[in-house]
Image 1 (tube, rainbow, N blue to C red):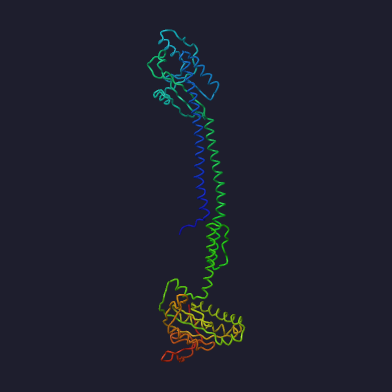
Image 2 (tube, rainbow, N blue to C red; image 1 turned 30 degrees about the horizontal axis):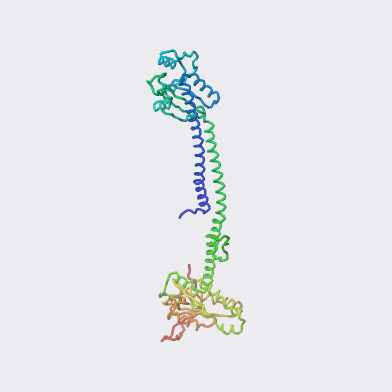
Length: 474
């Protein structure tokens, strides 16, 4: 058997899952695009600045004004400490760190064009072992990458200065790259902003999911879960036999239509429940089983109120109805307690049937209890008495009647004999047939046999008056 899972839990799970996926994708997309935009902007600024520097250096180097380029680097570093700019030779050594370039240019010009520098750089950079630097020189194209150090994050760009034909007069034509511009930009603030964006987006995501989950849960609980639970409570109450509750229909939607349908169903069940009081249980069972007719061994029980016609003529209508119902009610209760089934009520007469093992004994015990009740409560039943006849044998059960109105009842010769025994029994008397007597004689006290002439029978029937009976020990 599957474990019960409340509908509220399922709905909340669906809501949270949907919001996590939906809202999460949207917020993640915007956070990603924002961070990507910051990253692309930083890279674009760095490339733009490298292009400006490239042109400035080229313009300064062509006329042989290398010191101007050196001063330019220094001015940029002083103006914006977030940037570090260096000019490297193709071998990875920082330019202007010695006089080798000046000596090469003087040798190519066959004259002393530039004077050697007396003051050289105190700290010299060597980038030859940097794979990004080597790739930029080898592929002769800019290389941009990100790196972290000492808790900070940097963008670093290597952009080669090509040895153009107009540059070979000073630098020679034996190499393609005559230098590499190295620009390093501190993007720690940008990275922190990206991280903050993610944290803000995550916090916003959690708040949005919680708020929407609460609002949607409250809405669905009010419009779906609570009405469905109420419908279930109504159905459970009806199952226990109380047909009074109804579903309160508040909205004109599918749940409202379901509530109205349940109300109509309860009304129909109540009507069928009331009608079942007028239909025997055997009739109901036959409808369920789809039976058309069958033979069966049964004990027939007939009980009829004596002198009821004269009583009804001298009494008020309401008193007659009340007295009749009291007599029929207690007889019905006793018969059903002993396993009998009320087949029909015919005026002041009850027709009941008993089946199964011990059916004769159960019918006799019912009859004795009924006579005992009447004898000790004559005033309660306004002096009314009954005569009872009991017979047993094979009968025919079937739907008897027309297509419009029919009843599942018993017919046959043994039914007629039981009816005749009831008609013959005097007030307070119980008459049983020979067949019933054979089944209960070891526990019953009887008088007889008496001989009864029955219409349609050639000989007399042997009948007995039942006086008392011992119950079978359990």
